Image 1 (cartoon, helix red, strand yellow):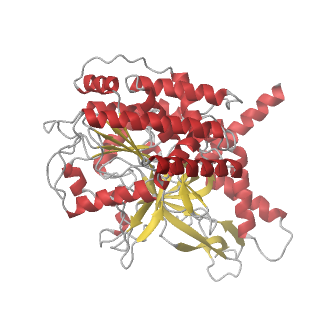
Image 2 (tube, rainbow, N blue to C red; image 1 turned 180 degrees about the vertical axis):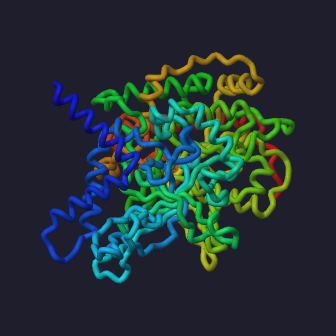
Length: 602
């Protein structure tokens, strides 16, 4: 037992040194590596780099060790305490991967001018000037110097990342929270010590965020635009090659840089730590739990709860060059937001009823972005990213994959959509229909594939074309009206353990590998042909290919909601019945109420 305790203490001390003095650790590893080398060819930078990565990953493989690393940036109360040369962790989105490659002196030979003595140092994970002992200098003419290439990307805080999905705050940061807040207030004014950001390179303009130039030391492995990365690396202040202007060079150089040693995996386990994996049969229990919660949130509307759950489980994937799985949803029947209600901001909802739904979903999904369709907002923002100036400026729709986008149409009143506003709505429509975002480059726009869930909350049928629209029940409409009027709503909060179980369920089900067996596909095709033939003989409207595709998508999501890895006939029949209920509900709602809403002029 004593030996176990000693080993644990040693491991804890090693992790502490990795965090506070990672360069010292790497230097010792390099000395050991050189002492053990038997070749006359000089050090192999690539091999040793792998040694460093393996060593760090080995000591930080357990969540409790990884969680000790201070989070980088403004989102952490310890942001002002990020020290140059220390190890940091940055869960971020790649906003601009086009900073290219840098040629870097990773192994340098030093010479002592007085004694003529030479030695090699490893400077792979730093841009800082070599802090050399007196009498030592770099011999830049030495054949033992090793140059390597690294890729550089501009990374930002994940847009819309909900608080529960952010990195845990280390114990040391909690202990110094009040002190850090005081430091933050001072540094925010002075600009000294606070990480520098470019506001035009963050999708949610005006929102507090963090940003860093991340340097990947394994060429060819840098992530692509909008990818999420959980980076563990050494923090420094360095130079931004794209920074414009002729200001003070010293001030221009103070850009945060992180030399990535490795990238941690982001899984359901890391988002909901400590929760056991659900065993066979528990998926259905979790499904019923989620349906009951969503039904309560929607005033007891069981049908709307079913469709909202299917929407939350949807994910656009490419199957033989065809995108399947997307399921944008328009819930109709929300009370209108009055013109007098002040906008809560470009990315905040002012309607209490739509904010109620947004707040509910923010507790269940990792990333959620609100877009109120207020004319001023739609006409003033840019939804598309643009590189016309030579530097990629962000747009509202440059979001991490699988972000929940909640569009509030209840605040869209009579007015005029200008040219930019129309482009923005067209861009959003492209995301809904094609799962693509256009990046505006100087000579030719480029469509980038994306995977976003779009939920539209409206009073009447949306001005956007969605995969599915559903009118809420009278009980749900009345329930949301009470919330809108700030009246008491009968709602039982969800137990925290159930909240975590639903989060885990959604993540696991959404990423379930899924296929459609040939026999099921053939059976559906035969039934489709029979239904069209029967409708033709009776002179009734025949099912279209679009309607068939929607039912298949609903059936696919029903199977996924049960944890089934392939489509079954039972789910197909359930989807047919569910779609019949939706069609009947919508027909009755349209007949009972006018659908003409105050729409903007074009």
